[in-house]
Structures are given as C-alpha cells and as structure tokens.
Image (cartoon, rainbow, N blue to C red; front, side, top):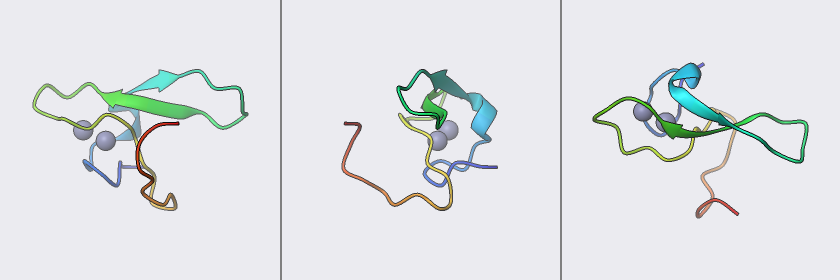
Length: 50
Ligand SMILES: [Zn+2]
Ligand SMILES: [Zn+2]
C-alpha cells in the first residue's frame, strides 16, 4: 500500500504507537520527501495530526 500524500510505500514511513488498534504511520523516511504522515487511500485528508 502506498501513501496517498507522497506515494511512497507504507513501510518507508515510521511506525507510531497509538492508543487505538489501528497502526498509524508517521514521518516518511525517504530523504527528499516532506511527508509527515502516512495516509492510506481510504483516509480523508485531515488538517494535521491530532
Ligand atoms: Zn514519502
Ligand atoms: Zn507519505
């Protein structure tokens, strides 16, 4: 699955712990990429992280 925002793969994004069962992924580790949060295809683009 690729990030909707930056189109890099999900495993290029750092995993972040969450209180929920959903695994959220954070900053993209690709050097040139400015993506700060993985968005999957089903996710609405929200403002920023809560
Ligand atoms: Zn990226
Ligand atoms: Zn991304």
